[in-house]
Length: 142
Image 1 (cartoon, rainbow, N blue to C red):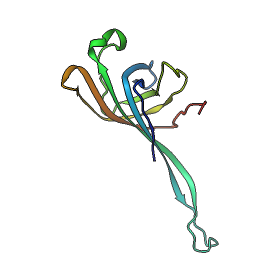
Image 2: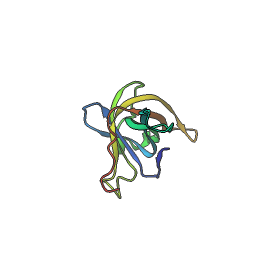
Image 3: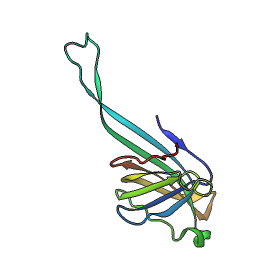
């Protein structure tokens, strides 16, 4: 079960691992799917019931956003989000109103698709996912 975070002011900030984060996508929505693997811990004294203990945690961040090439003064050059690249990321649901609320982490970028919005070539759309490596950072205020 994922945490879907949507809104028309979402921003996705990315960089190569260890670099300086920069806003890449605006008008962005993200869905974060955290997961916990369990390990079988069934013993002979469990009276036939399965027993499990928590194992490794993982997450996947699915993103969808826009980049308006006519607003270069606001967001810079169109992003190149390479498939398989290791990225650091921060997702802000509304950076203007709540600048300190974000989810972040590091992961492998998987298959971004790039298209145009509503038939115009000035607005590019991006869809893809980042498979987390390490811990997901969640907002302290939630």
